[in-house]
Amino acid sequence: MSFEGKVVFVTGAAQGMGRAMVKHFAGLGASVAAADINADAAADAVLELGVRGMALACNVADPASVTAAFAAVGERFGGVDVVVNSAGIGSVDAFLETPDDNWMRVIGVNLTGTFLCCREGARLMQKRGIKGVIVNVSSTAAMSGEGPSHYCASKAGVMGLTRSIARELAASGIRVNTIVPGPTNTPMMAGIPDEWMQSMIKAIPLGRMCEPEEIARVAAFLASDDASFITGQNIAVNGGMAFI
Image (cartoon, rainbow, N blue to C red):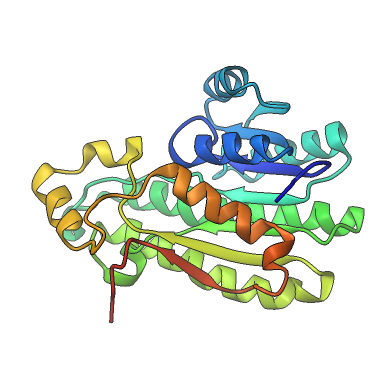
């Protein structure tokens, strides 16, 4: 599998799954646009990983920031072949005590941010005549309902968004799929109470959390020609967790 000559745009690139995506795609020969709300952290990641590409600031919840980021990638590379939406946030809030601003913030990054990056990425692909690929990241919380309401709702929305735009963009040759990870060893998990964490691990038949690199490898497969007839799908990477 090679991404030589391809341009891959990754959000949430400074840490966790995003950083693993940057490293993996770069290792397969891609030029990577590492986008993160923390531009310095994204630049550090690009430098430390020895990535061929660029780091740029992007607040995925801000339409102007997303538009500017994709314009910068288009100017630098002439287009984009793959967009990976891995930026995400969470907040431990009970439903009845969820502050309005926390709801809006989580929905804004996880769902609106994915929408904005899908839209601008697809526009750039169509403008350049590129039959590209979009890979979104949801969560098994969207299927199980285990977790804060804003997080579950935002990640369920990503799955529905993927199904819809995959159908609409198919005529342009743009494929769209979602990875649905189970509990994954990322900094976001640090704020989860230990009792809740252990309960999640017990529900995983393989008996452990997923590693970010395992998600990155699935993203690369979905973005590759090996997955040329896969679109509109939500691919669970969860160690065997099952939901009704």
